[in-house]
Image (tube, rainbow, N blue to C red; front, side, top):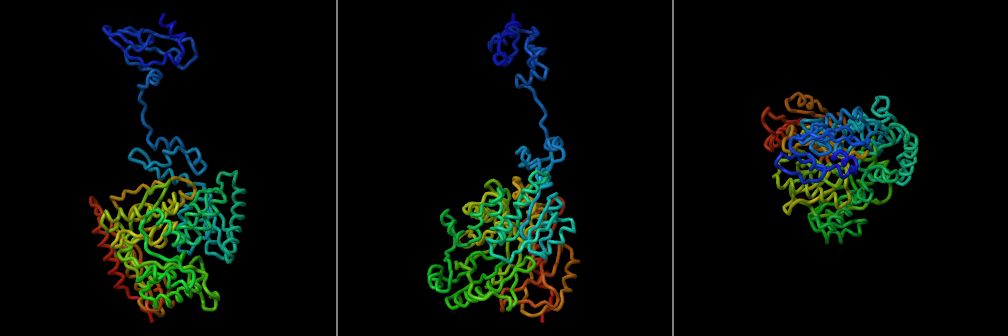
Amino acid sequence: AAAAAAATTPTHARAQTHTPTDGNSKNTSGSFGASLTGSFRQKIRTESTTAFEHVEFTSKPPWHFLVEQLQGTGKLPTMALRDQHRVLGSIDFSHLPKMPRELMTAAGDDNGPAGQEIRRRLLGNARVVFFTPGYKGKRFIYETAADLGVRGMIIDEPGSWAEGLVDDGVIEEFIPMMMDQDSETVFNSALAVLKNIQAKYQETESPLAGICTFCELSVPTVARLCEALGLPGSPSAAVDTARDKHKTRAAMKQAGLASPANFRVDNVSQLGEAMAVVGFPAVLKPISGAASLGVKKVVNEDELVSCYEEVVAEMNGTVVSSGALIKADPSQQAGGGSTCAFLLEEYLDGPEVDVDVVMSEGEAQYAVVVDNGPTIEPYFNETWGACPSTMAADQQEELRTMAMESLKCCGFTTGVFHVELKYTSRGPRLIEINARMGGGQVRKTHLEVYGIDLVEETLFSCVGIPNRPPADLSRPLCALAYNYVNAPQSGRVESLAALAQLRRLPGVVYAKGLVKAGELVVGPSDGLPTWLADIMVEKKPVPGDAITSTDAEEVLQSVLALSESLSIPIR
């Protein structure tokens, strides 16, 4: 009778929880379960062709897996990430649309491969166009992309050093484009080239996945190209706000963030109003500058007027050579007055830091403070850096918070950023936002100290892969410090032989010259000092010990002592 009743009962009614009872108990969970009592074993067969046909139900714990799944009592092993990865087989960028989010955002653990490895594999076969490669020292970026399986293409002016990367097997194609044109013309030309690339590879295994740049002055163009083609990237409005320091200050004020007093200066007639608002000491800087060009401290009205004339001339005399900004020959300088706008803002006291940020989906996935040495004033030329930071933990947290809030108020949600700040007597204050990976020693610093490669993090965000850098900030891999050796005086460099001796010393990562013998250099009394050399020192932990801020201070003192002992003759 029970079997007959079960056969005529709808499937959803029969799928009730089975609660076994002994001979003295009654099961009241429903007629289906009530028929199973004591040690009585009853076979229930259905006439349907459901998955439950020929399944034996019993008052004892059932051992048929379908019954366990029906009752929700079955236990299956949890697949480790390594097993899920093995099932996926060989993955590349083509798998991105169907990749489970939990895999793309996994941090990884002892039971499986790091999620970072999955994200790296997703870069395989991704076609990325790099717009303007920068100076030759950025070659490592494109080599890293190639090692990750990225199909790189570079757009730059004819004769660029990057042309040789094709023959070297680093990129697939170099696309020459005239860059000595106005910005709108360059944008339209680049857009036409990119549309052709997009159409050509649309139906292939490696369609155009992203457009990227590691050059500050190309960031606004790339943001607009990404928007025009529907590719991942930072909003152009956010980039414009960050690039224009006056707009940055306005956005911060609107967001209720502390910001220095400032005034936009479009011409010399506004200097009087500017100094009335800002006061002295102050800093005069280009609204959208780069590499500390045209930045100078001023302490009174006379100095402000002369400084303004000086920085206007400096900006007029800047040209691009091999992807780098350099001073032009007097015969090459543009005629007429500068169209560059400047910002006069209050001088900030206190130590300077960088906060390098990896942001994904609106939140910081990685934010690390790197200490900076006092800049050489009045030009603010950089000196040293040290990581991990020796600042107090609460101050570091304040700086990270200020960096993130500054990025958010500009409109950023994803990307890699180099944010410069000072911890002043009134707390953290923003200097500027760079909406790209920092240059110089930035990439190597984070790779050595925390094992995080900001190049690959940039590539992830460029093609729409979530960022989850697997860093343990509580356990640095080493302590590291570097120093730029600035020219103490103007003249001609006679020799760099002393650097070879430094390279042989224990703990020295590198000691490289940034000028050549016979080259003319500038000392601080004559203008923005020339960097003569770059020296980096690191200290690895003793097995069983952890790196501390004391180690960072030790390597900092070491690199400063080595720099002081360095003899580079200038005549």
